[in-house]
Length: 556
Image (cartoon, rainbow, N blue to C red; front, top):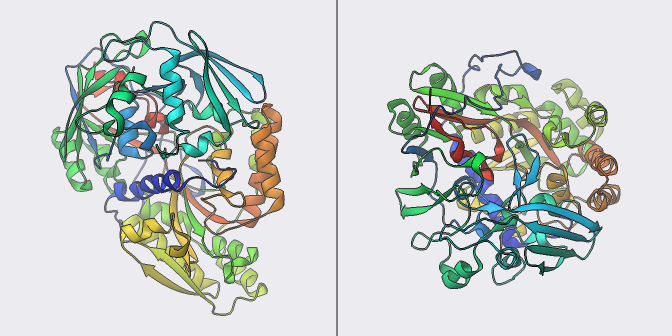
């Protein structure tokens, strides 16, 4: 999430749940050579793999299908949903004013249209003829109540930071809602295609109160599926909503059953046996196995996630940008991709993925990518640069947690690189619970120089990452500060013109990649397995907000 100012602790602690979930979902990984791919090679020696925009369209409907999910949600209340498990469920039940599409574009949804008549005003026309799952019609009052929840301190929404510049949310017509901002914010409208734009029945919110979104109450939204039942510790079932307003996304399955399978091996075995029809976030060690199985097909799709080492202490030897550059050059990132990511991925050239620039002019995007400083693997050059900066056996503490082998592989590679440039690494392995506090409690980061994160964006805008590194931002874990960077981010936030917005983002990126407050390691595509009975899904990180399950039906 972008953050021009400090985000709420609730907002950021939820971010951590999904950061750790990325690692937890990976399962036990094998330290082997990369498995073979299916198409042309990728850069930096990564295994060949193919990105699929869309799997074959469904030939017909199915009565039901079963989907694996690696953890049970604590709630499906949209105000607290910022993690893989709840969001991939809610994406099919609740809808937002706008829609984030699998190709990472944004389009109208429950808002049939919108305008930005002044830099601080957004006006939304609410789509007529839409009904909630209980049969009641969608009104402007429902939109106002739903958005205002994120402004209410008592709600403590994990998305509160998205609304940091919002002064008011008001009904200004029978089917019109106006949002007034305290200052221009070019990202606000974009976030309304994700959970911040979710619309729930005002009556349901009032009736359910603090029980909203729990296993007994569920939710009452407008999506292609409605909440069915939730058996704690086992499964959650959705039912097709026959009165859904959008014919293009009417569910092709009568029911979806999400089964909670925490163990990675259990999930893969369930794919193989046909007990489960599919699932996101396939364990990388199973890529080769699932590419060859007769039980279904493994697909890869668009992602916006980058694995990074966060520099949490700028008072030690890593306070010198030359040492940070040297460390990045000494990390065998290709080796990490091969050993830790199943060979499927690419060395990261930035803290964001290239597809976040897709909304701007192509020529400008290409120029931005070419002008970035690069840090190719060169231990000898890295050691010389570190020596120039005065490195001579200083200790650096690398925090880690026994989440999975992927995390272990990355930590070992970073420690090896630190040794190679003359530092003395100390690996501090802590419990998953204590590791989480590194992201929420500054005191927990005392004495920690480096720790790992997996960071994805929820909108197609570099600001979702770079805004988090501004001075004072909650996610600026090392308290890095650069006035020129802050100025570039502020300019990007205030700029609605695509060219100006891109130029300001590009300046922020140049500074971040020169100064390296975080060290980018690699990117991975989204992975999804579809059993032989089903097809139709569009593999993309947008599955967290797009109704992907509605498109799944019978294989021809």
